[in-house]
Amino acid sequence: MPAADTGASTIVDADAIAVPSSDSRMTPGGPGYRRMSLALFLAGVATFALLYSTQALLPLVSAGFGVTASAASWTVSAATGGLALFVLPMSALSERFGRRTVMTASLAIAVAVGLLVPFAPSLGALIVLRAVQGAALAGLPASATAYLAEEVSPKALITAIGLFVAGNSVGGMSGRVITGWVAQEWGWRVSVGTVGVIALVCAVAFRLLLPAPRNFRPGSLRPRVLARTVRDHLANPLLRRLYAIGALFMTVFGGVYTVIGYRLTAEPFGLPQGIIGSIFLVYLVGTVSASTAGRLVGRLGRRGALYLAAGTTTAGLLLSLASSLPLVLLGLVLITAGFFAGHAVASSAVSHTAKQGRAQASALYQSAYYIGSSAGSALGAMAFHSGGWSGTVGLGVLAVLGVLTITVFGSRAARVERRLATA
Picture 1 (tube, rainbow, N blue to C red):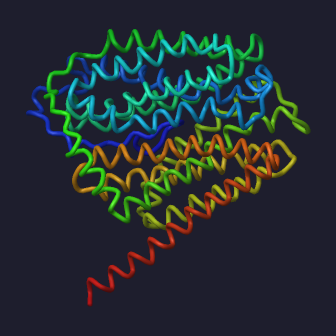
Picture 2 (cartoon, helix red, strand yellow):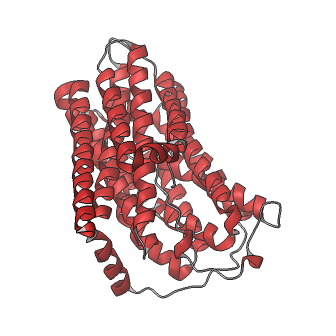
């Protein structure tokens, strides 16, 4: 996602997609535009409600299966890991079979799995189902922005993508909030089943509303070309740094929000599940911080904005160590603001840096981002199991130090390049 969302990263690559005359593309107020906007908004809601449906419920999953926090966290890591691994293959499939076809199939499979999740007989079965679900959902970020770039006029593209991102944000946030309150009354199985039903309604409406593509031209699946493009991106030092920064920021974020429920259900807080689910309303802070990232870069430069984002995240991590609930919540606000700002800066820099094969550059960033989410969920829970909340915070601080180290190295490399250019 562009700037930021509540769970996923979609990066616009309109320049990399060839389209015919804009006469055939949708414009605000024109035929199909409102249907298309609503359809993709609902797709975003369904995608990220499903992707993170168990995150707010991990204490109940632990209790239900009699497992540790680190074991239960794999229900989140498996989903985000599956998505990370399948973003590139799904982007290739959408080039061959069409954006709408891939998005429809992805949602259908993910929803079907989501309706099976409440009946998982064991933690192992639940983790497998979640991995399949994440892999299926990879078809959405891989196809949605390409569909919009092909079917929407250039002047309306940012607005259209903004609505899709809004759906991502609403889905990621509301999925966690709804599951928290439903689980408080009826347990985690009914809660994830509720998300599955909501996603089913969204998926059906998406398929009925989304206009048939008029500008898609199928391409061939050429693994050699894809492999060469990916290799070239991974050989670019700046892109490698940006991928690592995205992964490290998401490691912090994934670890904190995977474990926070365990901390808040325990003493001295003892909060009920519904209130813990509502904690995810803090994500709204991320929408604000992401929207200001462009101004931060304008004033401080990309690296200056990254330093500020890393410092804000670190301050939030340290503040969250307090035993006062208001201070913990303030810490979460700072962590969320810092993460979304850092993610917005890094993700936008990827498209700016990649001059060719931007779609693949964006997909690689998404893969790194979700690998960070998967690693953060698993490692954050392991750190919590061994060292409590302090262990999770320690992991987060190490990840932020990684961001700072990479940024400092990038600053030095840029100075060397400037000196060589003027020599």
